[in-house]
Image (cartoon, rainbow, N blue to C red; front, side, top):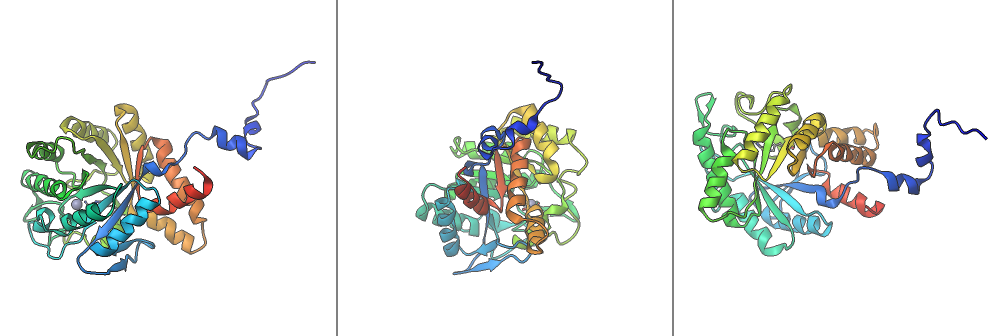
Length: 329
Ligand code: PBG
Ligand code: ZN
């Protein structure tokens, strides 16, 4: 009998769900996730962030409880953002040993074991003008700012944080932070740099959560232009040379091409931040019954991993961990 192999039957591996599971190329794991958390002064506070359903601002006591839940779900790490009591021109609370983030780190480290505490290092949550650095008139200063970022990073580590993540996009800040950490003897503390961070409209809801909208102007003089990818590779390369241990692309979903190129070109541990707008769009559409939230959540996260991300910062971390528990992966 004559057999003809004149076309391919891809569907052979798609009929049986067991086979489908066996040949799936990209799978999410809880170890992929970092969960962002917002902390502010006060007691027993758990403020819902209106533009981010399911996300809250916590006081330290409720934050600690939340951290235990995150740890118990099997999520390995959180990233902390602080909303300070006082904002000023210099963003002083960012590098105050008794600032909100520093206090939160100490409380978490005292009460929650087996949870990696990463901190976002930037000034925009702490400055009265909402900019990521010191300003002179309308200009955001570079070299004066990175000195303060280094101070902020050191104060987070002195409080007990395990890793710092500079998100400011000033030039030379990874170098400044590495140097300051090493000088203090913190040679074993890794830096995850927001290496290719775009000037994105997708950060809108975050600025409600972190209360960090710029009072004037925008972030276009330091964050990247949305059309650029070669520049992203140069940014990443510079951060690696300056001492970054993990490099991040942000946002994630709209920049899958950047994630892929960064991973291919440098082979570094690569993180991607599924930002507030990506999260809130899915939530809003799901609340209208326009999409199936769980399917789209998993699809969006799987796409980010398929593009090459090893680590995903996502507000869906808890929901995705529960999904993984239910679906056995
Ligand atoms: C602070 C910072 C921002 C985000 C993370 N760190 C906001 C910004 O640059 O305006 C955005 C995160 C998100 O949208 O979820 N520099
Ligand atoms: Zn900032």
